[in-house]
Image (cartoon, rainbow over all chains, first blue to last red; front, side, top):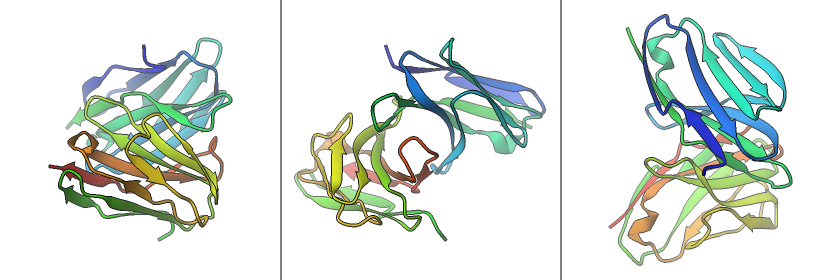
Length: 109
Length: 112
């Protein structure tokens, strides 16, 4: 079983819909990261969080440490949000990140 | 522009050849790391460094070497390329391993 599991693996939605991507992990973590990988391949860091909630524009990330679960929400989705969204966790006591397999999001106009 | 610079962007190697993927950052980040990304799999850590002169193995280190002689540079060496090393390689850096990461644009490597 992977230490980091994302769901769904693929998600297609219409422009304007509210999007939720989930991430569950099975290890103790120091922080959780959400990344965005554009169709061209570049990877951008969106959020790093260790508790609570963070918001940047139309993106919201939440984490529940007790349940070992995080969600990434996109409000008023737009075709330019189409990308692969990757969850990664920093493992306690180890100087490294472990990555989920990613969620491929497609927003149709 | 400040950030992480990876070269080359594309490379084709023959089995058995060696090469070095370059990674440089100008943000004075202490932590640097190399990952490979394969279809259907998440990014996997190859090697990492927490500062100049200090490196350690990640999840999939076999067939790769690294060194960190300066804070800025963290090259990844393929000793004898194999088709199983066909992948997209990303370098990333961070002020500290637990902080936000900046990724390079990636190197698409094909070994034939």
